[in-house]
Image 1: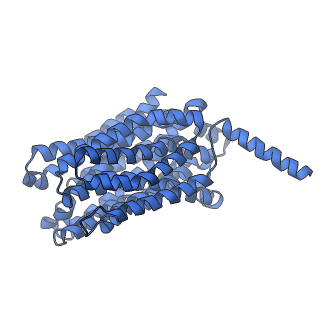
Image 2 (image 1 turned 120 degrees about the horizontal axis):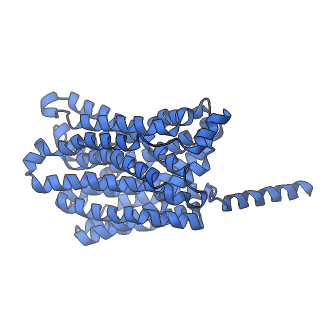
Image 3 (image 1 turned 90 degrees about the horizontal axis):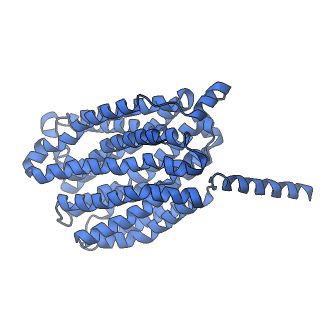
Length: 435
């Protein structure tokens, strides 16, 4: 389990490095380089629009790679998704700017961002199922949480490189070539990840499906026919996590540097410190999920998000590094209370024959609802006025309340407790029938 968890963690870290480095570049530099004819606000919105394209592609990636995972195994998904994302990220670092290519430059950027999202849409399902389907029942949430640490590591790597470059280079050097370095580095990281994953074994549950001939013939059609309500509920439930995380990691960077006049180095440092604590907390939250259940922690995380959004915006608007850090930390701790758990929760909600498709589609559809739109909506809501952007806080609180309602409609899946609840329901139905 240690080797499997490490391979999953490293792979998700690399793929999210690729994904996050684009988000940071969009907040800091892509607007003026690829949309120079726009106003500063419109350029930032356009850059975040290409950022959103990656989220729009993720459900399509989950459908494509989910089909592969449910028909041919979880293992092939891990290789194909990492290869696609790595190649697309390196290519982003090679795209000439608007000054050289004109309108073709942002178009190429959009296409490559779409391919990034396509690969990442398959990565999560493959990595999570690799650990969840190998893990012992009583520690499934713990082992499945390791791929969820990967995004924190990927974020720290991406922004650590960006922080070093912005601190060590002049603004002209960073805008000329420095921003491209993290994208080029993605190629080396992807090669290392592919090498690490080369010795992984297929999961026991998929091998059992293959041996008994119970693999789904058309996983997406089966999910759409039999599990559509579950997909919509999981997408709605997880939307708040994406909204909170990308508000902190993407919109706040742009808002702090452009509107509050805080240096990009200070903003990146505040966000990175909060993300580091969030990543270190992940396995401890997962242990609680193995003890108390998946659903209670998810409900607590949603409630915490709803209560913290207005304080977070107020702390951000102070432009004081320590207060901004505390605002980000509170939001990310609420976020990880949910997302440390969902790597075990989502696979348990779906039957094994369509698990790779169902869990991945629900997870990545939430990314469209919460991650793709949030930087755009938050940027628009924060335009104008000198006070704190309360509209952003109200929007995030509303998303949290919607997600809270969706989680309330989902069942508990903790092994043992889920069976007990099912037995009680069956006994009640039998008693009713006898009456």
